[in-house]
Length: 453
Image 1: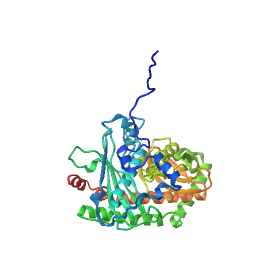
Image 2 (image 1 turned 180 degrees about the vertical axis):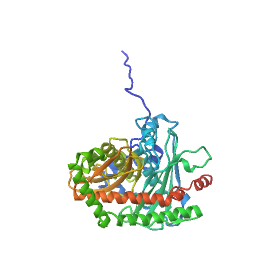
Image 3 (image 1 turned 90 degrees about the vertical axis):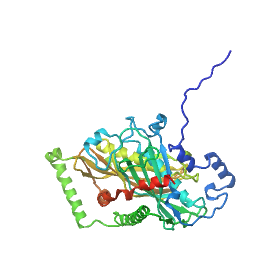
Image 4 (image 1 turned 135 degrees about the horizontal axis):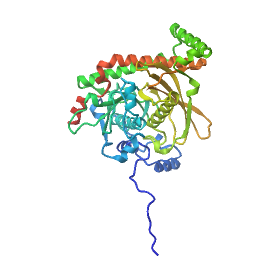
């Protein structure tokens, strides 16, 4: 009797970590099982003992030397769209000039998946600049901003290059996502969907101490603008750190604001008529969400035993989105991610804990509300013998409902003030640079010139 065999299911093969395969092929060099076996054989992590010592190349590099571009063929490949499409079957977002009408017609894409790709892309770009003689990690992600509306399904072009490096250990990698142009055409300004920048730091592979890398060689006025913008971004990050609530105490105006809010909350709880006409008030503690997850090898970075930053961006973004949705009972619209720093690496096999809460709200002209969500993360080993903070991420969303986030403890009031400062700084930054948006993104004409070299 012949036995017939059949598969339970049949589908295309996909990369396991959710990152576009072309980027993963450049990012991950060794299968996990090989790195794991090598680790057992030599008794130390393979990433800390390179097989061959390569001396870093410190000669000045051009921006074009690190330029990297990939195209996600989402309009051509429905299987790939499974990774990037949302439940509505579309890939959409909105611009910063947000309005209620837009929020009803534009749905949120799986931005978390694209954030993973952008971090992977920044790593590829960084190694093109530094070469293989160093260990390069993501130290911080600078402001991520939606530039133009995303409507319909289209192919996406992800591109990036090193735009700021002075010869120290750090560099700035500027990236953008745009609608993929036709062959030979340049990306138009209105087709740029998202811009961001990553701060990458190079370390000695063995000692893990910062090492010098090649400086940039500026060759055109367009490159000079990008380089100067990188310098301004560096100064702005230092200024922002000095203005956080842990570094700068509330001033007289902020103290008066807190007192006024406290008095309003007292009167609201005793006045039913005020309650009926006020925006729905929500305590910070009522918005809190927590998650825990074991870090699996599929999310490892180039050096095999640590989780790459893109996974943390995806997981914190999705938690922040869910937190904002739960607090507002509305679909949040992503506006931006404030500059955020990765404090500690996250080892494969560890447990990552994340806690999100809405810390600040303010009304916007459309009648809705702007929310800032903080996501704090820390890591423990499986035995839970140690606890290390890994980073705090601040996401800003808009919702089309009037709500008011109210702190009730001293710590929550301080977080509320910190969120307020960040939102005001973001608004000032947008106003300052609105006439020089090309300086914040990769110059599209310069891209076209390099692509034809």
